[in-house]
Image (cartoon, rainbow, N blue to C red; front, side, top):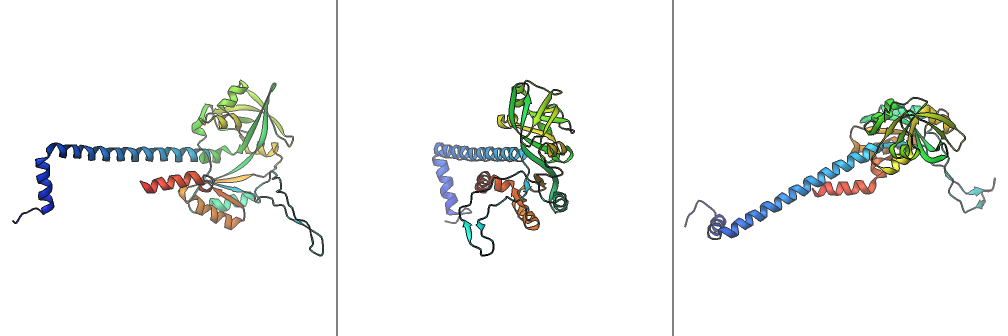
Length: 281
């Protein structure tokens, strides 16, 4: 018998007419299954976006560092006889990126680079009365660094636009010391540097560790405190396309001979999970 519909269609229509309740249940089940898949996909996509944003809010996409100092075996002069075969790893000193101004200018001109900022990082102590808190200090130029890291959006009191006599502290540290904007703190370093600074702003990263251990000061102030006159410990870079960071980092390393880390390499486990989930979607 000729029909305008294929045999499969005729069979399906006959089944739907004769088993209407079962057909309804199947259709409802399929609709619910599709809805769950769509919901989970949207949820995972939202989590990915949030994790990605939080990760890059707190760190530069590329960090250019001085090469690590390496201990070498001791040889006797003249005959090449090795005197010491067991070599202990050398303790790393605080050192500057060699010719960092040239590196900064070179990287700024590269395609895809959006912002480049010099940074000085080191360890210090905040002293107020009897209280003594170990902190990680970061010396910045606000005009560039605030475009690199979303610090401005984390300020809950005061401002992030610091000068040479100012300091930014985290909310937890401010509470521990009983201070607020306008109060004075004494910042000291192991190299003997000391400065009395005024709290210009208080930030809240939503992370107790960062809020209690991180402080920001002006670049020149950090250079002076850490005995790093004119130097910087890193040059930090953001790109137009964050996912090209590893390729750009390798290019910079090849051109400069410096140690270059990308956020992708630093967060390799997170990035792999993110990439795998993106592919599964």
